[in-house]
Length: 316
Ligand code: BDR
Ligand code: CA
Image (cartoon, rainbow, N blue to C red):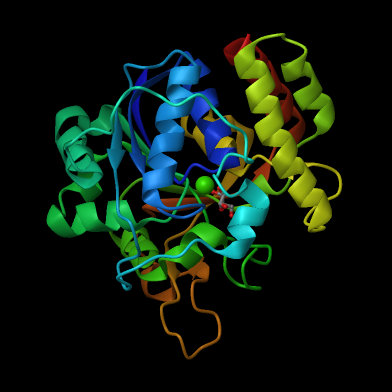
């Protein structure tokens, strides 16, 4: 079993990543750091607490991460995020409120402490902006070498972005932080739109969750249906909605779902070049030993089918 920290901006597909991690027998979920992104940090933290409790995981702590990017001093939720994930981040579904509180320790300090304590055993899994890891690296550069594996959902190498033609949403929130991470974080795997857009879930799948007859099955189906409808209405994909964040969790423990390309990458941080926030191979590090890789192909049928089985187990 690996020790896993999820860094979530919960978010519909983040909610799926949480459920998947909870159900996986090779994952010991030691904590969740809340990020801004799909919503405010205060909202995403509450969503994670509520969902953990819904799934009977009320011993997993939730920590507050950054409330805005490293280059701004405020954050406003984008309108498109509300359209895709609902005003409350979880498809405007009312999940029963957790009676627990968010932990007092900061998420960044929790991450640094866990990196020292667990080292190779630790998997850090961000599915939102990379601000928290960049702040941890700034405070304690050793973190870059200590963490056993960092698998992130974000970026786009071989396909266009989903915010601009070059930029994926998570990287777009804080390109400067992402560039720090791509340079300083050892053993890094990028699970970007290249693969996540090929893993689609449909209402046939969520009908099976609802048919389980449990509260959690119904609530998760309602949350996911909102997101599938948004994908349809915005014409992102009429066939289903992408399993961005859960795919990253799966790849962290079962790398065989994807084919990867070893590549040292950077993020464009020059606002004048027109591709601000782009994830791309770094010519300055091209001849250096590879510390990172990007997923470029996915066995989508196997993943979607395994994901569905996992959800039916967790939601039963
Ligand atoms: C990513 O952006 C967020 O909206 C989703 O939760 C996912 O992590 C996809 O680009
Ligand atoms: Ca996310």
